[in-house]
Length: 462
Ligand code: ARG
Image (tube, rainbow, N blue to C red; front, side, top):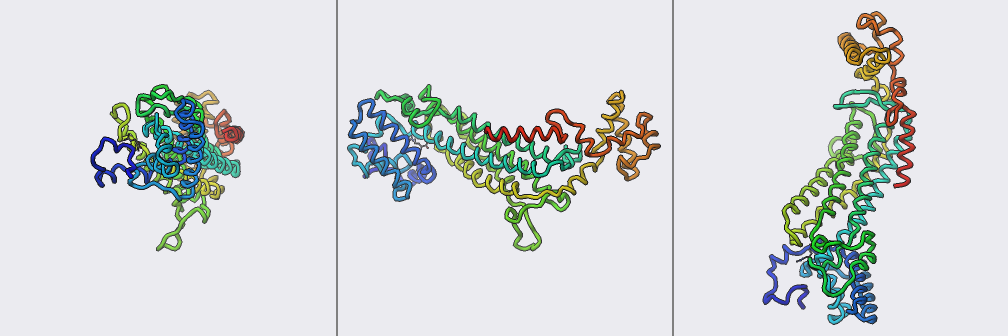
């Protein structure tokens, strides 16, 4: 029998080449459980509208239960001839209930409103999964910050030594970015919680079905689509989801790049756990940060998924066009990649060890306390413009002599500027420089303790 949902007006079957092009069942099969949930809800509104008797509804529901079990255990699957998951599941239902009852379910719905609804359901579930995995990473980073209290490191701008900061301060900066990503997922979900079911192909249904009841049944807190054309044709919910996953990828890539640099011989700031690093097939000594590199690489792929999707949507006229079948693979891929990457990435961050002595030793290097000299002068009434010059002169002398700021003699200080009395040395130490920056968000141990407490509290509420 012809499984196509649209064979009536055609004299000939589809060419094989068309079938091959048209088929999406190999990638949209993952929507099957959502399709069946949608069918259950749809059967109920057909009954409410008087289009299915109570007996038909209960047989239909029972048939859908059986189909669901057969899909779950793999005894029923779609084929290329089925075209897509919706067609395959209608065939499955008819095989179980016969064409008279099985053929009734399609009334008042279209694959256009179905697929828009199911895709939202799928992405909402995966937003929750990815949100949970991000929370795990945040917890690992919070643990890393908490496990290394008071450890100073060189803070950098332009990758050059800038000012000393606490390692925990630096790590907690990444936690902030991740918590915004998690928030983006939650806020996206609020917008995505609108059900297109009942929009039909584009114009709505003449059968008196209740889209709000279906929406409630399927857990769409925002109710049903306010406009059936928008319900079937809009995909900004997909694009926005793809942006959030790309942003997560980019945020991970920034942590990854630092881990890769920190893990070099030259930096030697961190050591990766054996279980979360890889070796070389030729160089026996190698221990590589592959997880971080894959994170960096996959971020490109996630950006590509977003870009490709936006290109597909650009200039697409209303309402549904078959182009929209191209919306699923990239975003399914973004989910898959993050769900594989995040657990490994979290494991890497949770198990790496920090070379505290090395970090602390380098914290004051590169004249990173020059700003402290300038600010010390400002506190003594010297205009910052002059103070900046004077501190810069100190650096120049040090560079010429190959010494550090604290090695300058009283005479050298006095020669550079009469304002530089010997007690300037009081600020030429890392603990002092850190402790002085005790305003909100600063790098002082007291301020970082507040950040840590707030990050833990926010994560618990997240
Ligand atoms: N498989 C399609 C998609 O993913 C849904 C089917 C709509 N097909 C159609 N000819 N109207 O968008």
